[in-house]
Length: 111
Image (tube, rainbow, N blue to C red; front, top):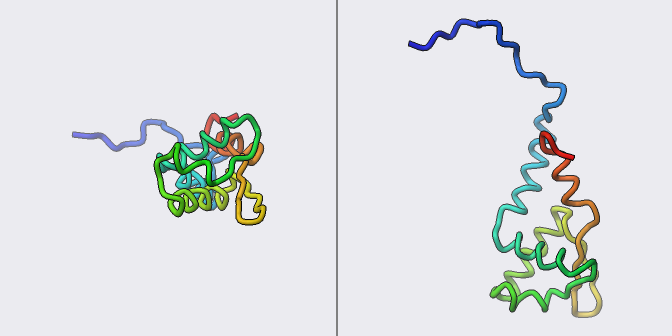
């Protein structure tokens, strides 16, 4: 039988724990990354050595239709991972500096 008597354990410290609102915000941010296609999009853009990537150049490497790629790009922009620069009919994307660092810093033991 399990003994539930308090044997001197102290409650978890809340000084370093994130609050409910911060956890909800981080969960929304992580949800944007929790999709294989979006991780690939982010990888392709980030791997382009700081240059912008045209949305039209992502369909072939991803093997996805243009509307699907556009949807994933929109989610990543709204989550703050990518920035968009519209030029005529084309949209160019680049990684927001420090975006991934901010996510890592929000996690326990993060930077």
